[in-house]
Image (cartoon, rainbow, N blue to C red; front, side):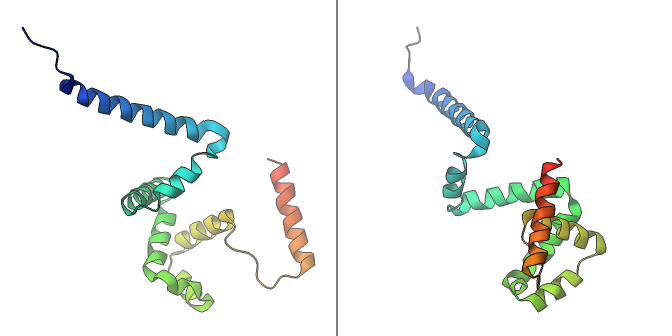
Length: 138
């Protein structure tokens, strides 16, 4: 007769632990808009392996959703920190195709990365008011 061996249950314990972990992550992502998951993800992003995996997942999602944007980001990432200089950034944007440029500009505007340069206070207030009115209309 076969005797009970607790070592045989180790794979079951591992699977149960992984299911519990996935359930906890799903719960944290749904609760209060992921407010409590964000610090955990930021902590995991400090580990190089997890950072690479999250970056791959993000890139794959962008490629599925908007291939032009993915190509534009890939081209601009090749230039690295040179894009911080406004002249070099303009030169980098000129290397993009029109579709890639439109996709990148829409993405940058959505993220709030691009602020209009050289605007005075009155123009900034009008822009802010139009943004608020646009959000109310949604």
